[in-house]
Length: 334
Image 1 (cartoon, rainbow, N blue to C red):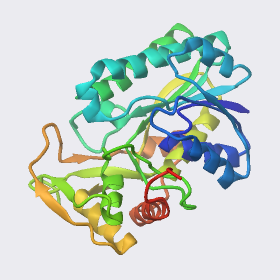
Image 2 (image 1 turned 180 degrees about the vertical axis):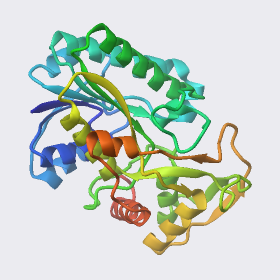
Image 3 (image 1 turned 45 degrees about the horizontal axis):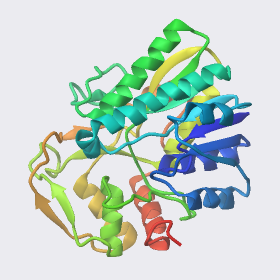
Image 4 (image 1 turned 90 degrees about the vertical axis):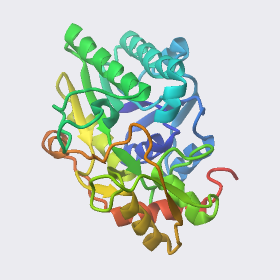
């Protein structure tokens, strides 16, 4: 089976490529390297001992994409802009890339008669929790442009399936991917100041950042800091394979990928300090507007529907993150 994977050179993409190659899939990776590196693809091939086809292109370039996916059987769509804060500052860029880009992809798929799709969505489509944990039936009410673009694409996919119910679509709603491949060859490689907690902590531990800002310590949680559902990137990548394997019948199904376990900011700091044997200095800063106390998944539907559940612990997440950071203090720069 030949898979066309957009954004395959990124953080989630490279780990997903490793799992797919190890399962015997043929891959065509399509990426514009706006937030990724060709070196990461070379490392994917090094880990697996297998090769893939790499095509440099933008998902908004419909003609190039249409030619690139010829002969493929299914698509995993990971490409897109993903920083919540940046989406507030640059909403037009996010709608152009995430929504317009997906429309181009779907038209290219239709011309190539490819109707099997795994879409990378986000738990941000849920917005503020009405009840916890989040099930797939929770109302969808995103609070920022990034989450809104994901919801718009989800609605497009639902409308597409209603118009032609021969499509086979699974929508994966990620919670908080962290960690790295156990080899230490690939991992999260943010450009500039990290937007996410774990890579920021890793850069503090390695000495690239002076300290961590903990935004708020007066939330109604066990230690006053915000609680989130963190999932190891390898578990997340394996979820894509389980989703592909489940796409035997026409459908358009959303599925949470999370652990169901929430950890606070200070839980993560302590676990990372233990894994790295490095102090992670932090200061308490005011709450950020829009932040909420707790946010975690009910992953039971994933276990029931695609026979997937997360297996890796917080200790695994911290150990593998540190292993990648320690071996690659400047990321993929050689």
